[in-house]
Image (tube, rainbow, N blue to C red; front, top):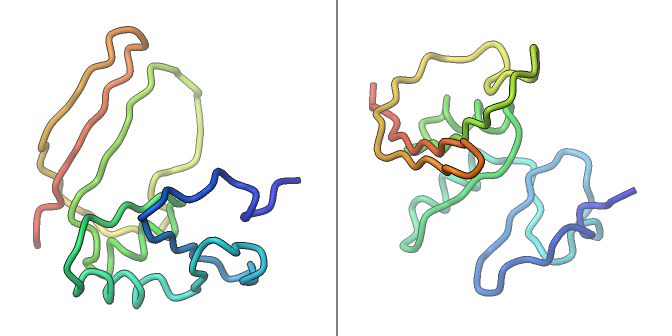
Length: 121
């Protein structure tokens, strides 16, 4: 069984924050652990520095989107028909308008990378 701390080592010079309601600090010794994503991300956005990258599930994404803390979304369309799957945003989800910023086609795999800005309400 893989534990949170067993994942790939953090990238040097980049702050890593893990959002969880169940993990303990000893589970993620190389990262800051928090269960309050909205507060932490809002605080990070007030500080000077680089972009904030979110890698997480739909519930985390939805909560930050509703709080107005997401300004860019990146997707990859992978050419496989599954016939089902997990929705990007679990219900209830608010409608968010997107504006295509750029795209990239990966010819070898047929994957399309899409980068969108969130259109302010």
